[in-house]
Every structure is written in structure tokens, then in C-alpha cells.
Length: 196
Figure 1 (cartoon, one colour):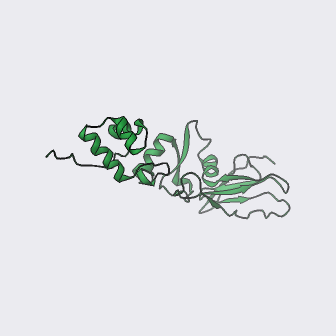
Figure 2 (cartoon, one colour):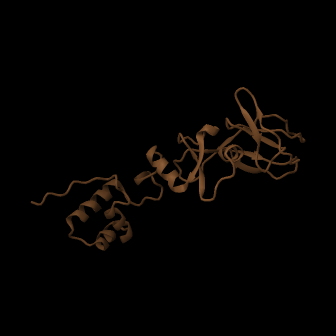
Figure 3 (cartoon, one colour):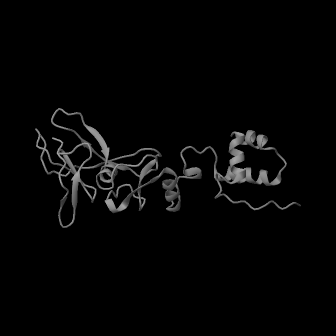
């Protein structure tokens, strides 16, 4: 059942075969997926219900996936809708790239909202849109804004070594160095202490 069919276009929606499931499923440029093969218990033409799944950071917006299978006894595979749309309409994902949602909303899986970009570009895009988890919103954080202010004040005073500051705040010296160089926690600003 792997015949490559021409895309079906209606006035509002274009449908193409799901890559790897040609003859079984189609995906539309509006981010909908439907079964086209007749099997026991399945209705051809039925739009599949996409389900949310949370991956990564606990505060992250959910990604949406559908369950695909070939036939009644075929093993089911979960696939994210944005991946199905991108592969069918944009083409195979280039090495080193990932799929970006232009508007930052992972539930908007329409073709006009998807593009391939490098991980670095995707992180910059997320930061520009205010979607990046930094500081205390980052699930890996060990410091708070107040503690970082204290670290930055100690660095400005120049009395304690980075190692002593690290010991005081129970972090590694590399963390203190990254703060000093402005590579992390750069949004935390402190005024230079006034010497009295």
C-alpha cells in the first residue's frame, strides 16, 4: 500500500501523504491528520484526534501527537503533528535542524507556522519571543535572583575569590565564572556598591 498519490487540494486545505505511511494517512497544511486506508475498526477519512503531551520542562506548552498504525494488528506509533506536516510539505528535515513554530505556539501546527532551523537559531527565536526558561523559571536552576544579586555584589567588591563565593553559595566555581562573564543570569542587574 505504498503508492505515492498527488496532493488533494480543496478550497481551504491541501492534503498530502504522511511520510512513511503513504496510502494509510494524509496530513493537511492546516495541521490535521486523517486515515485513508480501510481496516477493521477504522473509518477512512476520519480526522484523527491529536493529544497533548508534555516533554522537557514542566512549564513547557504541550506538543500534539497522533497515533498511527498500519492495519488492525499493526503496532501503533506516536508522531508529533508538526513533524508530519513539515515532512510532508517542507521535505525531509536537514541534518542539524529542528522544527520551529514561528509564533511560539506548539499547538499551531499549520504549515505557514513551521520552518526548519538550527538548534541555535531556535533558541535565539525562543529568547526573542520570551519563551526561553531562564533564571528561576529554568527547572535546572540552583540559584535565585536574590542569591545572584549577592554573588554579583561580592564579585564587584573583589574581596573574595570566585572559589570562596562558590563555596558560600554551594555552587561550582564555573557557575560563578559564568555569572561574572555575563553568560548566565545576565538579566540580573546590581548597582556597584558605594564605598563608605
